Image (cartoon, rainbow, N blue to C red):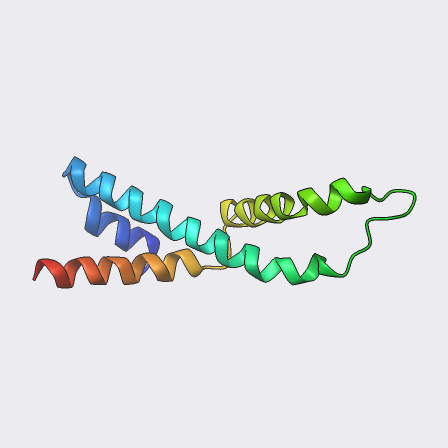
Length: 99
């Protein structure tokens, strides 16, 4: 199921359904950003913050915020496709609950 078929199947003319779909999308993207943040974290663990262009102790303190921002930006730019799969599963669960 593609994004277009999901969107057209759910939105229709019902405004409540459109809001629900938007909230599901937002939740799925937040999950993907959280996942990416956890995957990026080990990349930065061994980096030294000392040196001429290092941020020192402050860089170490703010690193988690930078990683979260990088993950959110990655999702905003298209992500890795995890949000699409999560959203498809959320839709399936919703449809099963209505049946």
